[in-house]
Length: 383
Image (tube, rainbow, N blue to C red; front, side, top):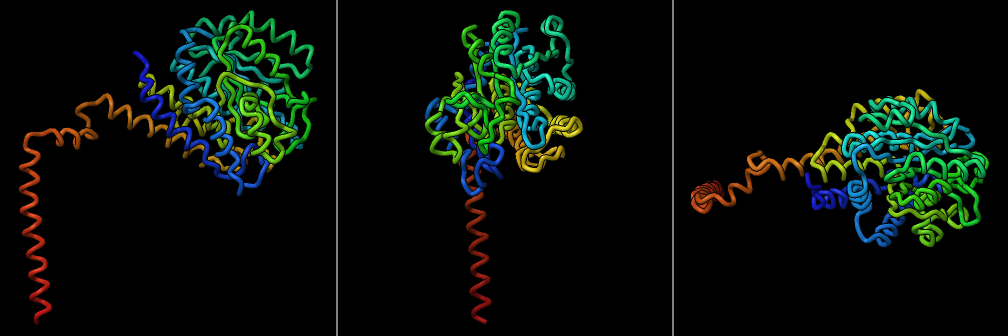
């Protein structure tokens, strides 16, 4: 079908507002919850791009992706002091990968550090995708591959160039992935230098751009790939912005209060544009992937525990977000595509020839009912 970009944009406007609502902390806790960091970062990104961010991302993915194209999705934030990857990013990455496979018949290729590969494989499989080597994965629907993201700069520089020639992606998406600052160092939201712990994704973004691939960054705190699009705003909005602010720009930046939610909003926009509500993952799948993230040890950076929480919020928060996005899409698709559906009853009546006569009859009835009521009140007061 021809993509319904009008519905996609309407959903994107609502989805962006929903996912940028700050429930607790922003960006892993760079600032107290009393400061609505995410709202301000979102407004800056919207001003930069001039349209709903999730809409722009999904529209570009639809326009740039052909069946069996590969899309690289980079994720994984190795978080001290727990020294293991946090759940924000990987959960959204695998669920968005599933959506891209379902909606666009694309092959998601996940890019993450070597230490994170077994955990990511478990999460990918929890979505129903099979993980294979790249050559096999790209031949068949609902397959995925994982490739290593080196921490060593020279290795990353070399591998990024070779990998783009092999993968030839239509797009590269980076979600909750630490980016080098303008000084070339990588930081947590609070400003801790983690340059020696994280993969050098900037080489891959640069190589993707040279290859002509679409680049999308999804983040929540200012230190992630793509936040270079609003670098000056990060400096003024985020208390640690002068230290952590990203220097890496992407074609499109999506901002959410939690990065996973940015991926969910793109899912919703894809579903709206293609009238394919199945592109949004189910509540059951949300719970299955979150449970798997805890089982493999992915943590909530606020507590350091692998308990299914994300950025200080319990699972019910993300479950609520995905269900609201689902209803946002399904109700609108239902309204647009089912002319005889119950939701169209009011509109059908509006154009019915007996409309005015029905109103006249009911007006007469209501007037008589009202007259009788006040007559009874007057009689009672007179006694």
